[in-house]
Length: 143
Length: 288
Image (cartoon, rainbow over all chains, first blue to last red; front, side):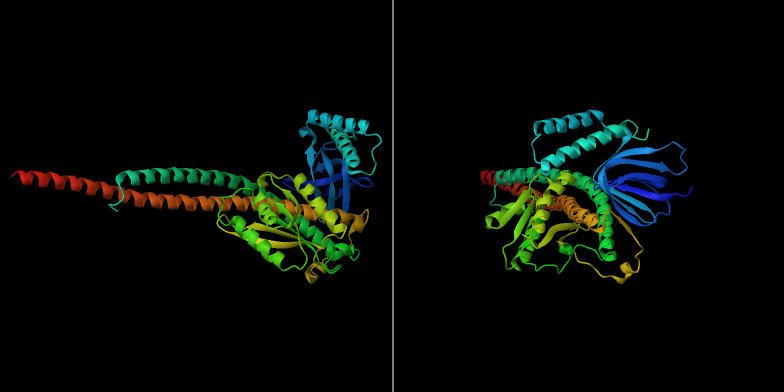
């Protein structure tokens, strides 16, 4: 199968670089897969899962990571830029659970808070991130 | 130098050599920190170039760019200056250079500027002179995280959106080599579109999702955050390089002084011995 070069970047490091056949990301409209020869595009990503099928990988061999939003730049090669990203095997479940509990506590204590306030958005985002990471650590939602 | 007693010279030698020991160890510490900061800087530099390029391409290839962020969309009256200095001294002309450049830019304006100080040296300077220091970041710059840079950028961007400021200028020290650093000032917003024909011929159809504006509204703040983050990281690298140089010079000076003092000490000791011999000889001659 045709492959292309994929790079995943964060502000402080190059997270991944390699030849891949298929990459699946979560855009604002839902999951979307990109293969070699895709039309040029620039799309925003939400908190979600990143699935990478490396070149010459077997049918069900995926590398899975949790992404904290960002954007994907599709040209002849694809670059994903994100603020934070973690491989599924590197996720520290203890930390995820404590963050999740913190966010839930906050939401429970502030049920009357303004839906549009920054704190509210932050708490919801934290919860969403924790859930995504829990899913990813468990092998992703496609498993 | 016979006027100086052997005791005095000895005392001075002791104080100079302990200074030398301090500056030398500070030099070694700075060299280690420099190596660490440089590694982070090199990685960040690559990424920030990538993001800046993407945004540049986007600006050039799209006709639906929100005008608010482009040059010429509003009259520039109030400028916000982000001045990146260090939090600690003993680094030669590092802070002086950056503050001098900032002051020069500020003196060109008619309206009072808004200042965002990164590093306590800049904050102290501008506060003492009665400028409006909007916010500051005072932790050591080499340990800044992207999240902190993001929080730093947010109020500035909000002010820009509310039209309280019309221009954002970043003043920082740029790293050329371990021996050479240069003060740079850069306008972050409004964005200057280079209508570079080379870039424009390269436009293929690009799909934007959800829309050009949305992508844009995400990328512009990201661009500013990224710029601030990489400037702070770069400046930290420069600070350590500058301190290493300053400490190396101080160590060299101290060693030179020690050499001279050592020579004087030997001379003084020798002349004391000569004096004693003369006394003995004179005494024994007188007995004859």
